[in-house]
Image (cartoon, rainbow, N blue to C red; front, side):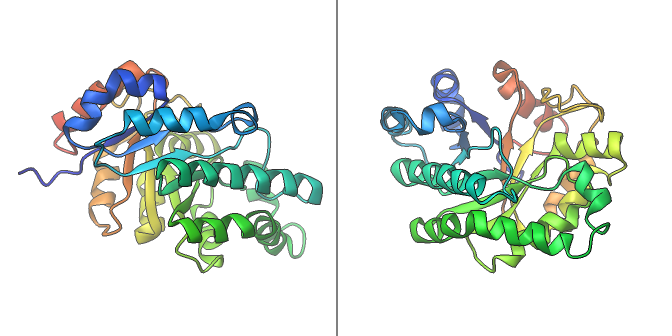
Length: 272
């Protein structure tokens, strides 16, 4: 039996119907992406949840969702905005409870601008953490109660350690770290951040989720694996040192290329 990691994917329910046999063949991990918008979360998402349960009957991989993120930050200074964001996070976790998902992806609050300004104003680092705690405190308790983990994904992050410290500040097993390889490659190529494998090494066993996408270091491409310039051998060498068994999730724009992306990794002897 191969000891190579089994890679899963991110997709919507429509795409799950296309790739269901591929997913079930090796009981791959799945991240559903139908529950990110206000329109869905304020609407009749229960019907989507029922469809998910039906399609995933017999699925043995780990299940997660991409949580809501459009139009907000976890670190808003405005208490009214924080209340809306807190409600969105609750809605996302309600979905997790309904479909049996044990992980929800949330976006890092750290931007390119903040990297250059966190030490410009006294106490700014602490204020960002405080605002995120005010936003997420109820969601973290809810995640603990339902056995789910909120994973904080790098977006514009240049300092890979700040997001890890933020996750650690909750002192909860319900908050961990996610890495998006394409976001890291963008930050490396365009804003002077470290290379992708450094993000993995910095996170260590706090890492519980990885979005695998290829990019060129200029934009958030979400290309199929092998189409960009990410040095995948270094990334998987860093992952091999971990014992946290993070979910390895292909997240690309052209979902028809999901199997080909995993085949590319297999051809390099990196994953299956």
